[in-house]
Amino acid sequence: HNVLEVTPVVMDGVMYVTGPNQVFALDGRAGRTLWHYERPRSAETRGDPAKGTNRGVAVLGDRVFFVTDNARLVALHRVTGQM
Image (cartoon, rainbow, N blue to C red):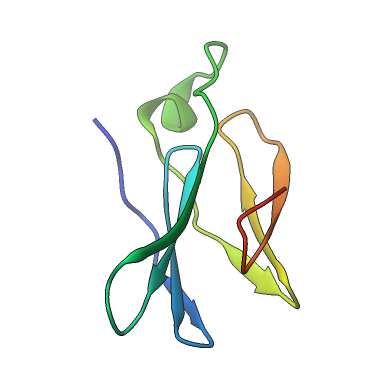
């Protein structure tokens, strides 16, 4: 059971949305996926993170930031999706 508690962030026509341990960059006009980053779910998590709850992304400059289910901060390049 995944809990969606995020608002997509849009910057320069790209919409960033998240799921558990994943980020999608979507073309805001065409709706196609530009890139998708995903990492495996952590076995040691409990509570809300184990259910898939996440808090979305933040964008600063050319980086998209999100927090994993085990409280790690990940920075991705906002154009390529690379760490």
